[in-house]
Length: 252
Image 1 (cartoon, rainbow, N blue to C red):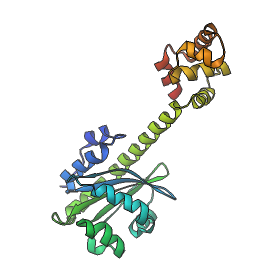
Image 2: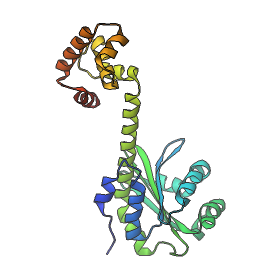
Image 3: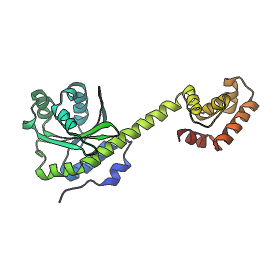
C-alpha cells in the first residue's frame, strides 16, 4: 500500500514558516525524508520558499542557499524535469548519490553533507514552476522502491501546496507594501472602481493608514469638518462603516 500525505496539518501551515517543518514531519512519516527544501523556479532566479531538517541542523538551509547561488542553473536533473513537464502533472527524479553525474554537485551538496541522494519534484501551476527537494542521510540509506512510488503519488499534491504557499506569501507581501505608503493607498482607492473623488480617495487612504481625522485634516490642509464630510461620502459610496470594513473593501 502506497503511503499518503496527511492533508490538514500541511494545509493549515500554508503561508507560514511552519510549512516546511510540517511537510517534513509528514514526509518523514511516509517516506523517511530527513531534510526538505521548497522552491519557486524563475527564468533568472530561484526563490527558496522554505526548508527544514529533522535533526535540528542547518543542513537544509545551507544546502538551499548554495544550490540557489551556485548550482541550480547547471542542475541537469532540474533541466531534464522541466523539459518533461506537460500540463498539470508533476515530474519526479530520485537519484542516489552515485547516480548524480555532476561530480561537484555530488561531492559538495550530497557526499560532503552525509546524504544518500536526492528526490526532486518539479511541477507547473499558473505558469510558474515550483519544486520540492527531499533527502535522507547515509545512515537511513536512499529511498526504497516503495518510497519512490509514494513520492511519485504525492508529487502533484506537494507541488500544489508549494504553489499555494508561494501565492499566499506574495499576497501578504503585496498587502504589506500597500499599507506602508499613503501614496500607494491613494492609488489603490483611485483604481478601486468606486467613483470616489480625489479628496475622498485621499481621506480614505489616510484612514486606512491609521491617521486620526484631525491629523488627516492637517495633512490635507482642510478643516476637520470637511474631512468628516469626505469620510461620510466615501463610506456611503463604498457601503462601509469603519476602518476595518474600509480596508476589507479595498482588498476586495
